Length: 389
Ligand code: 13P
Ligand code: SF4
Image (cartoon, rainbow, N blue to C red):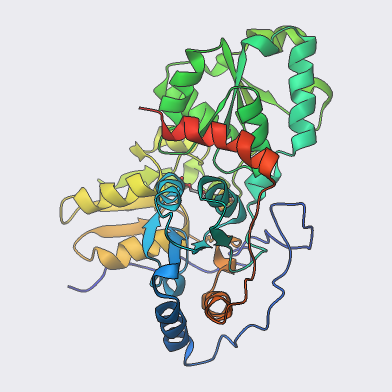
């Protein structure tokens, strides 16, 4: 059957300029130190295959759903960030975990694997701009503001997986939990059994969408904490009265989808189902028909009847793969124009070949490590997540 997939139009801002610069303390990371093979090398696939075969069971390759096709073909497991965290924790025999995803995911894998295992990120510049929006000093200042307002003891911190290890460590230290887009409601329910309010880091949209649409809070129960303003720009009364203190962070990729993209596709394709990721803005999520993690998006499309039409609001590599894999359904990108996560896209075949060949030659490259104290604190928040019902 011929695919109905239509490539969205290219624009100057197709690849958002994220992940630039060379700040080793940032989620954006640094440029790759290695001698990369040329992207035009016709033997890249054969080289990756050979290096992976040479490494055998010593290596396990994890691939997030937003990775390029050229990379995902070498993944032993693909998944959303929750599934990949579980998979990393479940592979104690693999000496090397090659993480085709972004920096915070590789950090979480390092925390969840044994001390003998090594986690490799093929390009150190594969960070996440959302994770960069919550820095430890800012979060500690926010907690001080809650202490000053007399409400820290009744506040439970919850951080989205898309945060650095030191933010997860902070959350673990203060008795909180990590969540992903597939378990945010369960994690928030757990948190509200332990406190009167939640400090939700760093994605305001996942926090608001879950709190209001899934937990039944009013929009007014959620207040935005702006880390660039004293006390987040909130009064002590606002800090104490809020149910959800939403950190002012967001995903620049999912922020590209608008309510007018939803209206436009509904006009253009009668009967279309709109399926979006919860990192999209509240007005987009409320206008959509279905909302969920990347894993949920894949399962929803797989289970959809032949002939149905779907406009999908998440990263383009995944939506294109779904479009091409399901020619019996009409799958389209929610926006008219191309939108990739540029930092996810940094892991390309040349970087993967380079990392695998170096490992196969016994040279450890691009290892992601988390210091033991941070790792222990972050682990308690990650373990708490993995134990959620
Ligand atoms: P999930 O994999 O949890 O759906 O998250 C998407 C994402 O943005 C990862 O960075
Ligand atoms: Fe970060 Fe958004 Fe890219 Fe996910 S899609 S890695 S949240 S910038």
